[in-house]
Image (cartoon, rainbow, N blue to C red; front, top):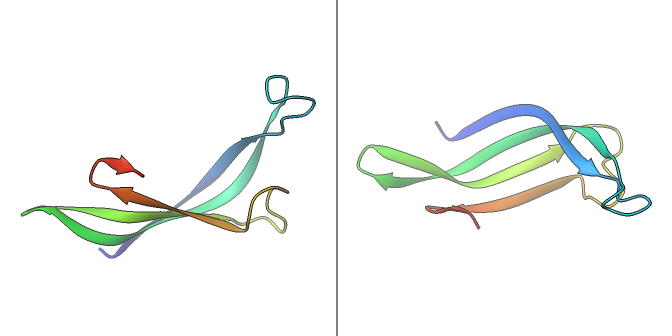
Length: 76
């Protein structure tokens, strides 16, 4: 397997009027794990996780997609 795909929602705080008193809004996303590397003789892990906002407009302070590196110990 070279990649794994999933879909769901990302909950982002509006931070209005403040982040403590803000509300969470759900945004549809596609999630892709990719970049396979060996962990041991019989185990592999993905080295990157990309979140793609699939609605017409992503959240106003977010780009259309975000990629996070993943190490053997977890997200970097």
